[in-house]
Length: 297
Ligand code: FAD
Image (tube, rainbow, N blue to C red; front, side, top):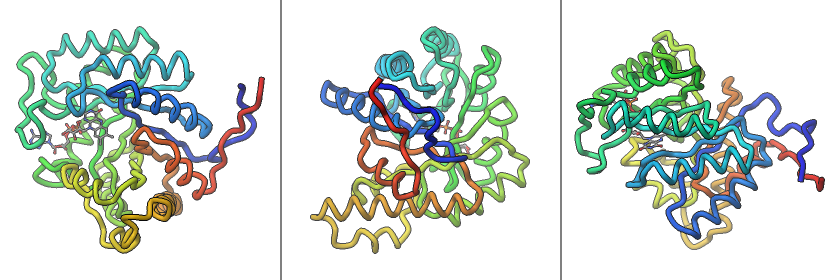
């Protein structure tokens, strides 16, 4: 197949898609079907998470390699510095650089002992994400994305402390921040005002999480510090046993969120795909984007 470069997907808007490395053969099949399907949206880049949930670096490397060499997508590898010496981090960076990675999502990460355990830097490692950014910047002219937390990182004492960390990451060479997912755009607007006031000028790209299942999401959101506004309970009320209607509401909710952010001048969006295409497709169709057509070669 070949794509028609003249058909644009999202006009002036840029999209990125986040995936996680598969944990078994079935998930592997699902990931690659999803990647193929979502590639039609001509993303600016895709990203693959690293080390989260007890996985090691190997599945991330395999997935990133395939995204670049087979799917032909501009691919960012997430990278954490938790529990690793600088040398170990550099070895991974070299491996990823060797397969063509030019973009990292640089993160501190969480201790393997799980959330709630206090973070302790490795004795020979990077002390935090800002130090990791500086280390990457010294290696090469990478694109470096970092995290941002509109509702504050759960461990952080205040939003000011958080914004201070974001500023340090930007000053050390980060080129973009991707936010934790959120559902309350007003709160994001307020966060952006404080970010601007702090003199941070890198793009802050909202992370959009289409809601596959509100009950499950609530558990996860609690750990991430994301609040669930009351309107979501209202929109999903009575739909527990109605997956078709639930998917429609989910697509509407995320599309409305993106459209509202667009009206406020946001032009880049990072979508948490959960390695599934149908809901992401529905959201982007509702926003009014058009996929690239695939035509037989
Ligand atoms: P930082 O930017 O270093 O810190 C975030 C905030 O937490 C700081 O502003 C600071 O106020 C506060 N903080 C940091 N350290 C401390 C401390 N010791 N005490 C008190 N407050 C502190 N995790 C993975 O394992 N793999 C991934 O691939 C991954 N991808 C992610 C992608 C995105 C877009 C986001 C938003 C998060 C991702 N995470 C991932 C989760 C991330 O690793 C955790 O949230 C982790 O706890 C913080 O890492 P960070 O780089 O965001 O931290």
